[in-house]
Length: 255
Ligand SMILES: NC(=O)c1ccc[n+]([C@@H]2O[C@H](COP(=O)([O-])OP(=O)(O)OC[C@H]3O[C@@H](n4cnc5c(N)ncnc54)[C@H](O)[C@@H]3O)[C@@H](O)[C@H]2O)c1
Image 1 (cartoon, rainbow, N blue to C red):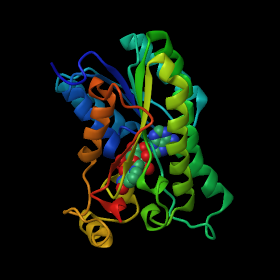
Image 2: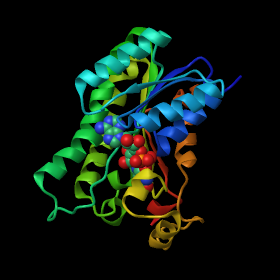
Image 3: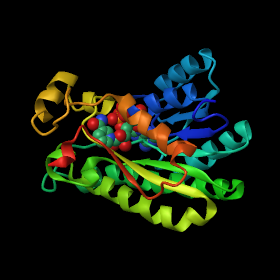
Image 4: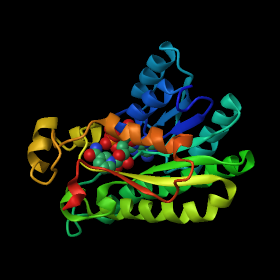
């Protein structure tokens, strides 16, 4: 039996990076996966590739900052698969501006996707999970939500948004445990994905930049390193785990 057999999962920001790695691993472990993103071309291409490999995979265009968008994605998922067992709130953006450089618009954009998007996801999926008698929610924060400064790569709003995801996760874990709903956060360190590439980094420059801070070679993570964490928290292997912070950072926060 595979680790996620029979489970239905919605993953946000699944067209690339960690969300896509998670979707691929979920499908390999037997889950039916709804890949969602705002980037339609990559979303459709990656979903088609998964479906061709024999996976139960569909896509929904979902802007996590829009309540209407959540409403239709959740209703499409329930119509198609009948239930939602797992929600991975993974979509995120980064604007590398500090407290003094950022404008209100930068601040609001980051908070809207990284924090409001996570709240909206839980708000729309939890009633379905309550009706079913349980589920697992995995919120992707960052080590920038635990330790600020260098780990936020210059993004003050980013740190604030990820810190909020960390505390919102614990809030939800307490309030919905009675419904059999587990809520945990993942805190990646430096991982080479589209977000890093958009900031002008390569895997090598990233390892060089953070290498002295990250003790474990190769000093930069792969999207799958986070995807495996998602699989664990989504599966029944973690049935007694809630409100927890899974740090996957090559030892960065051991300092
Ligand atoms: N890469 C890192 O080093 C790192 C470290 C810590 C945390 N994270 C977090 O991991 C998560 C995944 O990031 P990634 O590195 O895989 O980045 P990525 O850019 O590869 O993937 C993020 C995805 O989110 C999507 N997205 C952006 N805005 C959206 C919106 N409004 N609605 C829906 N989807 C939207 C993008 O289109 C993209 O496909 C993010 O929450 C990010 O903050 C990344």
